[in-house]
Structures are given as C-alpha cells and as structure tokens.
Image 1 (cartoon, rainbow, N blue to C red):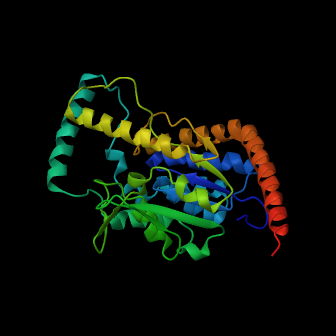
Image 2 (image 1 turned 30 degrees about the vertical axis):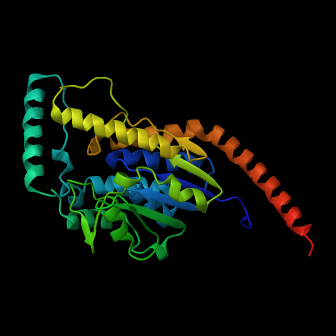
Image 3 (image 1 turned 90 degrees about the vertical axis):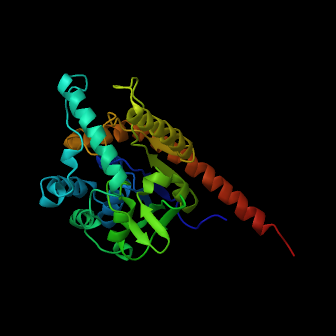
Length: 311
C-alpha cells in the first residue's frame, strides 16, 4: 500500500562513541545541501545525535552543544580521558603501559560488571538533550538498545527520551546496565550496530551513516587479549556490512579507526563527516530523484489497477 503525500526520507545513525561526531558533520553537510528527514533511527552514539537532531532539526546547534559538553564537568565525570592516550604504540613505554592496562582490564572483568555508574551517563546525556520526552520532538525518532540476556533489541519511540538514550548508549563492561524484569539492557550497538532495518519499513527512502572502525592491517602485539579484540571486530564489521545492504544510500565518513573514547578527535571527525556528506550529495540527490520517479510511477500504476477493479 502506498502512503499519501510526498516521498518520505529517513536516516539511520549507528554507534561508535566519539566517532558519532561524524554523524553531526554528515547532518550539517546534508542540511546545507537541502536534504531534510522525516524520521531518524539511532543506536548508541547515533541515538544521542539522532535525539538532538529530532528535537531541534539544527545540526549547527548540535555541534555547539557538544563542544560545550566536552569542556563541562559532566563530560569529565565520564572518565573517558583515562581509556586511551595518543602515543606511539611501538615505543617501549607504550608497550609496558599496554601490558599493564590489559592486566588491569582482565582483573576488573573478573570482579566487576561495570566501571561507570548509570547516573553519571544520565547526567551527561541530560546536558545534551534539550527535551525530556519523545512527544516533544519535531520529527519521529526510534532508539534501539539490546537485552544482553537474549540478544534481542529493544525499540523505544515514546515516553522518557533520556532513559531510552541512556540505555542505548550503555557500553557493556563500561557503563552500568539497566535491569528491567528479566532483561539486562545495554548498548544498542551490541545487537544492531546500525538500525537501518528498523528504519526501512517506516520511510520510502533510507540513508545510513556508517561510522564503524576499520580492520587495521597488523596486530600491534599478538596476545590473547588482542586476538579476542580482533575477532570481535571482524565479526561486528561483517555483521554491520550485511545490515547496511538494506539502505538505499550509505555515507561512510573517514573515522580514522579511532577508539570510541578518543574525544580529542571530535573536531576532525566532525570535519570528515561534513566532507563525506558534501562529496556524497550529488549522487544522493540523483538517487533520491530516481527513487521518487519510480515511486510515483508505481503509485500511479497501483491507483489505476485499483480503479479498474469492478465488482
């Protein structure tokens, strides 16, 4: 059944921590090119940026709000500056620091379920979000999270926006999960790294933004921890590539393979996102136009066919 009115366009924003800054740049580039969205679906970092966009439809405001956030106490309280430091990975001191870190992670993982309390993440996201409920948004938004008990994803589209975004952005092993009945809810990217499959049936034309890490050529230091990390990266990358096949158009900013916690790369990621959108704009406009033409032709055929049916 065809929907009445114009062709609807939606955008799916995936997870990636600080790599989500590229989402902001993409939205800026597309907005400047005249592209508007009827619906957003986001997971993890994409849920945060998606909620900010759905509330304001103003990517320039989102950029400034994030910059204010990065110099605030709320950001400092997340402790991400202690996760990864920029240094030569092959230097002797880096190798020693890395081994100490790996041992620390192993010990912590055997004795704790999280590092960051949920309340701190909630305070951080409260700073970023200008509204409290889905009903206050200017356009439709869906946010995804994952029940780590079953692997099933959760979809939120009404009620408490802040709680939904916090659940979607609760990185497993780092942020305290949410317990809801028998469910243990964590980051949406675990079950659905890009939510384009949720968006697909809701709009006529789907755009997905891919901010995943790439698989680097060489393992820096072959050990059990590195092998497990690489194995997880390969699996999630292949799964994401499969999901993205459902999109009508995919934008892939250069995320420089950075770790999710390296927020010192915010400005560069923003710039790369903007650049990728600008470079994609011509091809995207042609694809939308072609899709609209085919959509209208099929719609006309469908109407004529129905009108010709007699009883």
